[in-house]
Image (cartoon, rainbow, N blue to C red):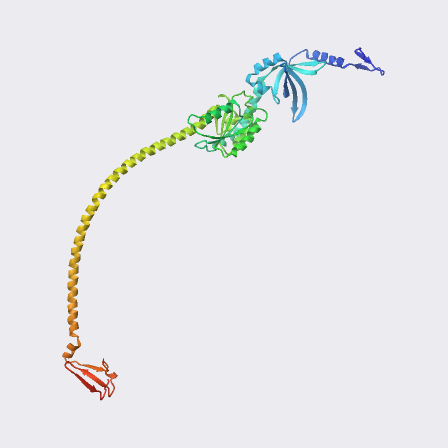
Length: 424
């Protein structure tokens, strides 16, 4: 049987309170202690939920070294949420999200039905921006200490940036601006763009960008382009990550950045090979490199053409002169060689006559000598020829006693027999 009394006595005479009484007591105690005062509290948003009625509900936590130390629920009523959203401006999406650490003004509320919660009335954006700047300053100091800003800038940037590794979030305005500017350039230069999609804001964005940098570095591209359109400082905070700065220093491909608005400057910009104010400015630079190279080629071609015309004109003149020379030179050579041949002919004739006369005289002398030594002429001077068996004998030793010999004289021949042979 249900008791309607706020206080129930059991058989053991214990004092038992209803749940409503307990919660009501807790509520009265809290209201008495807090006096409906406002508190400034720092906590991390573990989960945020938007209701259809326009209210926003939070699960808030505090963690230390990975261990949860506290947790509570909170809410932003619709009217208050609209005011907070207006105050946060473009930083709204970076503040009201899971994993965001916020400082907020609230009142402690306790409902007999829903229990303890915090009613948020204001969120302090300046705290988050201050924390961001503090972390950025610490990261910048470490970057300078390790000299990371000099590593990527030391790489040589190719004259023409044809193969481009593009890191960004496809579908965002900054991504579209760069792609359209480069692919639809007015000079109709063609570029090979390989996209490495990644988140460009949020808790895991820096780690994703680092992975994309590794992949882009292996793509054998001329340059890596890292872009992100405009956003609040909180949206761009991932580009101030120390590990991202280290990764840009490690890659062996030049990195160009176009992050945020004209006034934004991140650590990634500081360590990149070159940074630009917007994604469109990066696109301008990429296209302008090709324009400059094209202009250089046109200038070289123009100078080559002009020089070639000068050389061709000069060589035509030389050819014309050579033609005239070639036409006249053979005639002069023929005349000169004809005179030389006539002179040689005369010289040869004189030399031939001299040699012929000399040889003729020599032959006459030889003929006279031959005439003198003819056998008949020799015999006429009192000599004779002794023959044995038809052969002339020059050595008396060859004649033996009794040999029949023939003696030829100038006039007539004698037959004789060797009686005695005397040899000295």
